[in-house]
Image (cartoon, rainbow over all chains, first blue to last red):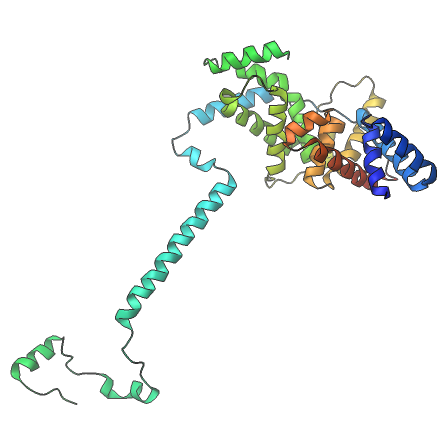
Length: 155
Length: 180
């Protein structure tokens, strides 16, 4: 067994949580492992420090401040609870809103693409040609007039 | 607070006597504050977090099952609040913060100074530990909870408590080596 397994047993021994077999096994290992003996000694020393560490009392007026905060929350506006939601919920809401917007943009783009783009993309020469521009497109007022007057479209 | 007192308090709270909550806060404030200060490392964050703990307790006390332990329930809120706590931006010197704090009951000035030094060294070392290990060390070594209580507070198995405690102690031992 590796020393890391015995380190777990050392921790359990500090708290008196070893079974008799585990105690025997640890004791036997410690006889032949100076490193684990050092770990046991240092862990024990560290464990004995904690009871001497300062115990802190709540500051004066703590309970009064808690009760005042609770009272303030009770009289807060109805939307106040919306600001008190946990972070993960707020993150989810933003992510959902972003998905809705991106989906709208995507489908909106698809919908307008059919209407705006030409039937056939123009070549470079064509795009500079004045032939692209119709003086009187058929669906314009001028085109309607020309149709009525039965005149040809000018080229 | 004895078990009967706890049950009485909860029943009075559930029947609408919210004023009894202040007594509840006064009973547990020192333990929760102590827990927060060792988990978070400074007085201001500890007070903020401790207030949040009691506010959450107030909001959920009506749903609390009196058959469970009120003390471990409150500790669970405390640990979770501290693990999730986001430090507010303040310029705080951690060391002076703790030194200016009102002392707990200590018999003599020498012993108080010694306990302060040890407390500071432990706080500094705990701050270097990852939060899950820090929580278990504080619950075991500072708050004196048993393995079963820690398992209930952290909502983990006793096996996990044992292994995390062992690893936390190893890390802390390395940090504290030659310092105390």
